[in-house]
Image 1 (tube, rainbow, N blue to C red):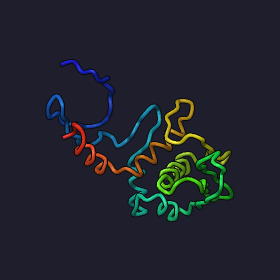
Image 2: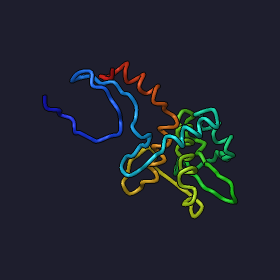
Image 3: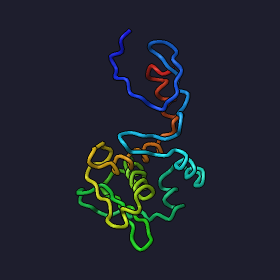
Image 4: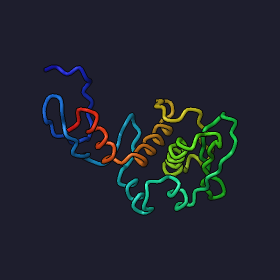
Length: 166
């Protein structure tokens, strides 16, 4: 049978059940490498273990990140900056509550992955959760947020319920 889907190399381990089904077994190296952006899962999981939570509010509190809610007039949704040895995350107070943890996790990604660059200039973004080749740090922050907020087991559980996963 000829596949209609492109063949992309990954470091995922799967067991082929049939032509239509497979079972996800894990990853080879615990590194997510997508479009040149790399997230080292061991570091993220060590952070989660240290803090005892995946909740970005709890992580920010534990790591002493200051959360600020300001009226950004909907020009920006959020941004991260580092000043006077203080990590700051600014969230537009007009953003709905459901979206705030995603923004905080994204900006936390900037703080943990890109602090040296942020020391020179803060990150400001108009579009969150987009993949742009001209903004690889935004994509890295998106990957960080996704890995922080979505545990593999939970995602796989839901995929198994609604798709061809075994």
